[in-house]
Structure formats: structure tokens, C-alpha cells
Length: 383
Image (tube, rainbow, N blue to C red; front, side, top):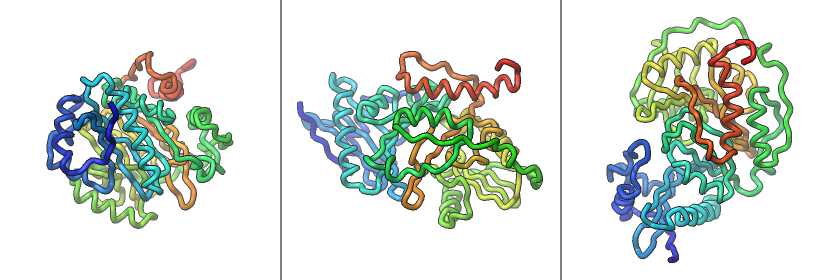
């Protein structure tokens, strides 16, 4: 039976909610599909594309894609199918291919298309591999749609982006290089050099770190962050696609402001941006932030950073983060696109991944474990 593919409209909100009840949730309920007043603005938003596949006049599959036209990125946010249809996954694959073609044709600024299993079950992310996406990393111990604790990242690049727009004249921190090599194998990237010992550049004289506390005021913090972001020099680490901070970690004088996203249901936190007026030790600062996150019940923390930032990488790793994903040409920078690295920090014992998943995920997980074990053994001989 031939499928009819089209963009969703306001009248599709109730059928989409009905399909969710048939599709069912995975590990956590998706609150968006339980409240029409939340789903309606999302479906009609200009910052997303909701696509549906119809069979015999009924919804057979639905997917939503978030759009960032400034940075040129698109993220598959959700996928749903009717599980009673024997062609369910094939319907979804057809919808994905059509959506990719439509977006690359109509959204000329979109260069990078990606998905994570924080919101998609792994069996659905596997469909992206069949459509040309490449595995670029994992998020070990992050709670995702499957509750497997090994979540994947897949990425698709518009034709010519890697060869024509990717900035490649830089060196890498030695800890990042193994992850780059996996991305290199998947995409045919030219090799890069490893930087000399970065620890020699770490400054020892810092101002004392004041006491920090967490403030939750989502609308106030979003507005404050937006105003700071308009002045690019005011924020560092100010790139985190599709994440809006809903809390801030700061000192009483607000000379240190760490903008964060906290998802209590998933016990997930991410560092979105920093506004610093004190010259403080970044390693000590991150460790203080860890303590606050842990008090709030977070089990997994994430941060992303420019792959060419050697000093920043050294500080992030010394604070206890472990690299887990490498995304070439991720952030738009003028006429070029820069590589970025994802780092994770877990407060739980390491997960054991299912052995039947795609070996590409296990390759990234293997490199992650090689570095992560330092948090278990330290400098223990033989570790």
C-alpha cells in the first residue's frame, strides 16, 4: 500500500496523540503527547518539521525534526509508528528518507542532520544508518528511550559539507584522537596532528572559588541567557543545539554564572554556557558544579566543546569528564564548520551494553572505557 507523506498541520494533533497511545512509551512517558496544549505549538512551530505518513487515511508513522537555521543543524526529535502494522519500520524508513530529501531541498541552511537515542529507541535509530547516517559516538550511562544505558549518536552531512566547509587546520588533544580516528574511518577525514603536552599551559594562580548555589527560574534564566548570547564575548561554551538552560549555578555576587539544563525525569544535566568575571580554576569549578548536580539527583552530566580547544579539553578531562562522541563540522563558524567533542560524566557504575548492537557503537564505547577507567583506578599500576 502506497504511503501519503505530508507535513503535519494543527488538525493532526489529536490523531498524533492517539497514535502515541498505540505506539506506547518506552522507558519514560513523553509528556508532550499527553497534553494537546503543549503538542499544538510544537506541531505548528516554524522551528520544527512534523512529518506524517498516512495509509488508507490513517496515520501510519510520525516523526518530528528540530531546526536550527542559524547553526545549520537539524535533529530528529521523535519517531512513532503503529506497532500493529507489519510494515511499521519500513513505513518509518520511507518517511525518514522523504523527510531528509524535503528538508535538504527546502531548508538550504541545514548542513548537519543528527539523532540521539536519548529520545529515540535504538531500533529506530538503526533506520538512520540505513539512510546514510554515520555513528559518531555513544552516551554511556545516560538514561534514554530504551533504558539500555548505552545511547547512540548518528549524523548525516549534506553533500560537500565535509570536503568544502569543514575547518581542518588544527591539532587535537591526545585523549580526543582515538575518537577522531573512528570518525575519520566513517567519513574519510584527512589526518590531524596531536598537540604537545597541554598540561604545561595550565595556569596555577587563580582567584579563590566562592560558594556556589543552584537557582531554578526557567523563564528568567532563559531571558538572561538569550541577552548574554547576543553579545558573543560574554559567554564561553555557548553552543549546545536545541538546549535552553532552565537553571543557573552562581555565586552570591553573580561573578560566576554557569547556565545548565536539568531534566529531572532522566536524571540528566548539561552545561550550556558560562559567564565568568572571576579568574578561577576551571577544574575546581567543574568539580563544584558536579557536587551541586549530584545533590539534585543527576546521575549523568554532559558538556560539548570545540575539538581544537586543547587547554579546555585538558581542564574538562582533569575535572572527570570522559570524551564519548566526535562530531565533525558541527558548529557553524563564519563560512566554515568546526569539529566538536561530547564529554560525559556519570556518577553510577558503568553499564554493560547489549552485545547484539551495531559494532560501530561498541567501538566508541571501547575508547570511552579506556579513558573512563581512570575514574575507577586512578594511577593504579596496570590500570
